[in-house]
Length: 527
Image (tube, rainbow, N blue to C red):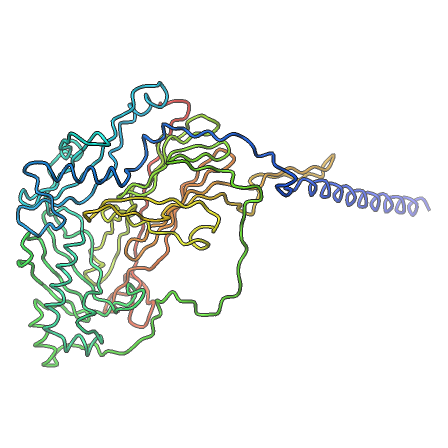
């Protein structure tokens, strides 16, 4: 009887404890639901004043007007014959790029923190001196209205830079395309029978980087592709090796040919053996465009959208952003990409500079184009390839969009509309939280909202999404991921040692990405 009574009592206590727990939990949940954000009409406590640091302009990228002033100043220098076409004359000087010359950190900190003098605003100009057979960098200033320039090439690189080291540029590609189209008409029958290509398609190719294997070289392998969207994964099995080192484009020569994994010393040799039937031929077969980005299925509807219940909690003025306890200056360097300066949390500087420095990818292959490829995207211009962002895909529709201006490989500055976006993002997870039923019930949590500063660069086959993320916890994340297309090669003997088959006659080649950032921490001072 006593045991039965004890069991009954224990069961009653257990039921009572469960009921008490359920009631307590329900009350706790009800209390917390009453704290959800209300509509702006009823709840407007986000009235904190936003104070932008007017001195952040010391980090601001050059404006279109400043770029034009630098260009015009250089064009008037005696003895410097600036041209937009480096091959127009053997003595022409080609103004390749103009960008901000960042002042020294010590001078900037004196200006920001000690009310020191404002550093001189200057630009860096890169000039190809064709007649001198070298490349020089000049600092031009002060801006606006420049009056001086100085050669800083040896100061920055410890040596003179030969003209052969110049990056690929527009006019060079124009002349290479003309040469390719002219030469390949000599084997037009082969091009049509093997690849279904006509002369108008001979210009669809990509080349290896760097332009040679030793200093002074300017020789490249060019891999032909089908003229379709996503041509990077439509190689046809035809590569040509061109020496384009001479300043005289009429001296450029096609040196070797690769056809279906077989090497030839000239197009004439290839043509002779092709017509004689002594080589293994490629027979053209139409293929669907498996590389197209067009949807394979009908849309399934609109996904979830974010919006600002009480308005944006960040503010952008000139090149300065304020978000809750965060503030920083920003820019988009033409060669290196996005960067932020003077990053402060609760008014205290924790980072002087956080910036992208380089994106490199190294390939392996049995074919020469990718065998020699080591893409250095900074040589192309990471910032200059940050094109307009698509609302609702690249960034939320409600993001703030910012234009950027660049002068590279042209004679006029180019404005890239909406090339930076800024938005506050709810990650759909708690930044921190804890629930407890020990001793007494409790719950505390903080939604993980953060500010995202983003740009996307499309350089050749790759698109890189770059994010700097500023969290409420006081932490900063630098993040990048790659999308776009891989570089590929035609399926030939031994190529599967360097990759996997991604289409009927296509190898997706092994490669490694190296992504470099710079972070200069200034926590509790400079040292």
